Amino acid sequence: MSRLKTLFKYVMWLVLFIVFSEIIINMGLNASYKKMDSKESDIPGIEITEAESTRVNGKVKGRIEDTSKLEGNLIKFDLYNDKDNIIGTKYVEIDKNNKSQDFSFFFEAEGVKYFKTSIVDKIEGSLTDGLGKIKFLDHEWSKIEILTALIFTYGIFF
Image (cartoon, rainbow, N blue to C red; front, side, top):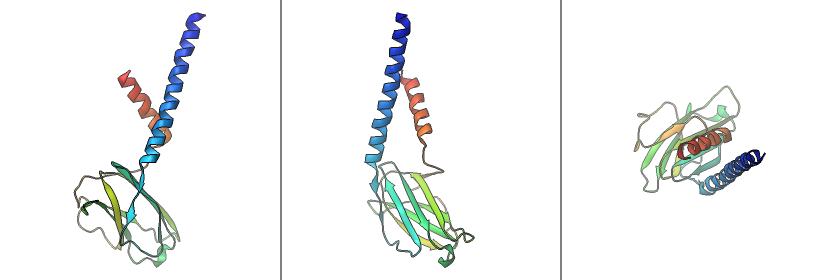
């Protein structure tokens, strides 16, 4: 019976440690996001609802109110660092069949401070324009993915 109590204590401490780590990590991640500036990006009909970056990654989310009023086929996002060097370019396709459209993209890059948007008809240049030190992600990590990575990391170190 005492072994069962000891095992229960170890499991309880492990669960408490994981919960505490999850809370601290989420607080740290949410506190490290800073609002990104938008320069020369006043395009009617496009609303940027969230544009934030940390030192190493970021996210941009927005909404197109009326796609039929926009002239081009793509929204071009140029991401810049604090030295006004372009880090990379992301193109978001405009779906003319829908009246409104939500869009979002996530990226991994160091030091992105602001972005510029424009409407274009086709992709200009290569997708590796800029410093080429950017990686665009398909989605933001979910809580399950973060927890899985956390457990995997605990498994490596303990």
